[in-house]
Length: 203
Image (cartoon, rainbow, N blue to C red; front, side):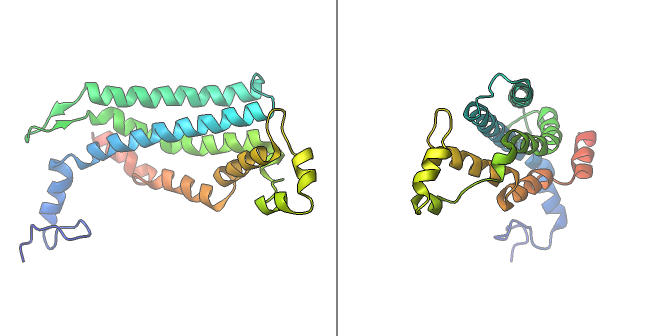
């Protein structure tokens, strides 16, 4: 068997040196970091939308405790967009003729996002307040109490079902098992904090 044929798992059987070359000569971390920062931007935009929806639903768009976290998310969103653009502007060709983004801005984004993601989750928790806890199930809306829920749980400009769904989404992000896994995923996706810092320092 040719040792240089990759296995289905992505390893190079019996050839550690060739495996190491995969990461260095293909600029693996740089290319994947460009994809990752695009995910950072999409997730940050999503959290921005959730916070704005929560603020509108609770008639608190112009309140200082609402403006501050939303402005922080906008700031980080613009930061990630700028870092991605900087990596593209600073791209160079490698020895094979492929265009490789500048890895400095991309590695900086990984450090920023791992620290900022839990803060976005906390923002959702704070803005949702007790609405994060007092959530009815969908089946409750078709039960004998459904007419009361539709009447008393509606928002200023929204039906009760929509308001409940919005806070259910906030629960999933800020307190549920899904949100917990996502937070852990973003903390460790590109390595623990020491590994990411080492990668940034050595770049």
